[in-house]
Image 1 (tube, rainbow, N blue to C red):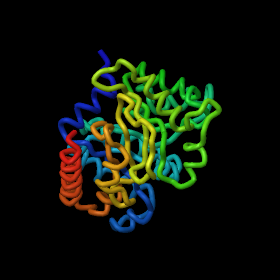
Image 2: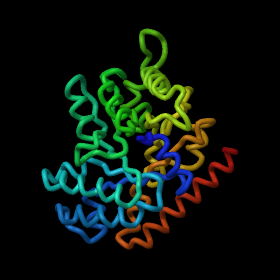
Image 3: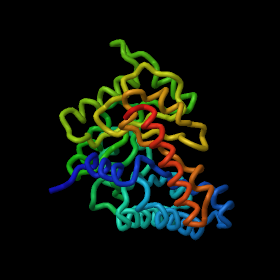
Image 4: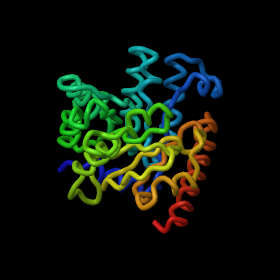
Length: 280
């Protein structure tokens, strides 16, 4: 029987703590690690991160754009990273933020959440801003194969508010309709649904209901400015579902694997303290 992504993710969080580390091989980070901005440097960087952290953190999240910029060689490396995360008993989420309609969304689904593809990961991020139901092929394909989707809802970039906080003709905000759509997908699922949302760890105050019976990925924790106080302020009663996502705050400690592991351990402990303050 296929074990749903939501179940696998919750088990990983219980075993390792709620932390997502991005694999973001930015050119400046490659230089800081003494690596060339080349496919060779990209592969070395990625493999060190996976070998150091796949068994320590709940999720590893390769950012597809930093692999795509190296062309076909970069895509081949991303395929190996996905396989290495799986071989290391990790949970992988490809951060691709794909979104389109019809057969194109189905093609993205075939690429990222269908096990017949070498790019298939446990989950993928997706943009619903062509309408929530535009993601239907992706949501259905992921569900059929026991994989997950993280739907963008409230992002930290200032421009996001133009769309996400705008009011629909029926009254709710656009972001509110996306959160409601995820809630419907996860209704009745235990212990969690397999459709999550993305809510930035540095957004302004929101009155949206962030409880979706599924995981809440919160990028921007750490080096991008998100703090424990921000998490408490933003997520309230949904704190127990939050998966804080960080990248540079951990990766800046490389390339030494021991330092990467120590930085991740500190971040996990810090977040456990936040949960205790919240009573979750």
